Length: 333
Ligand SMILES: [Zn+2]
Ligand SMILES: [Zn+2]
Image (cartoon, rainbow, N blue to C red):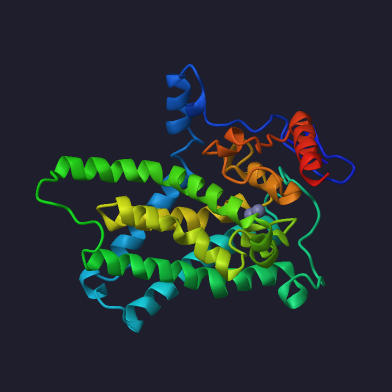
């Protein structure tokens, strides 16, 4: 079967022709033109995915969040409203991508890493069904966890415990910091994810917690947040960085939306979401797919090159595969 100029191997696996490229921000000497292209181009750092999460953040803040002043006390009413809203948003996005890729199969097998189906009749999964298991973990545990972190965030801002602006902070400094934190949020997410994920691969935590997520060798959109409850709590603790830095609650909400929504496309099992024949939206999918395949590589995201720094980067090439095998032999004997 063909997929963008490369053929599938005997197992039916497809991989991109080019090795995974890291962002030009880490190149030395600096390449300002490449950085500008990467930042502003389509697809690029900002556009379309992070711009989309920013749009969901602003729309949620403007129309789907109670007034901050009403959230000074924890009350079942506004927390339930946020829970329902999050259930709807996650169902729409994760369910929509699942429908697109796996039910209606609108992209066929174009740029699909593996043609193995999602597991059915397997005792590894709740209800012996991978998709139902993933949905139950996402909607039953993931969304309440997102909601809990969000509720605490609103309570902190509403009471002035975080985000306090002193009289000396001018409007210009305020909005400059606001814009900088919006730009930085996906990088904060990538660094936080790397650190938490390395911790989760520590043997006791892996065995009792993170192995739940790794039951998903083949992945689909619903696999993104299909995690053990402890991993859910750790994963969404990325918002704490914004508690410490942000002056405006929208920065914190954006951090939550990046963490909540990006795993849907990141676990689609496809390298790109194709828009028409030519335009593909990438979100580092192959990078994380290789982690699900081989476990001992690509702990972070392709955005923050921590895997490169610590020697666990797998770019999909045969050389990277050999390096990983040598590393595993050295570690496990
Ligand atoms: Zn994953
Ligand atoms: Zn892992």
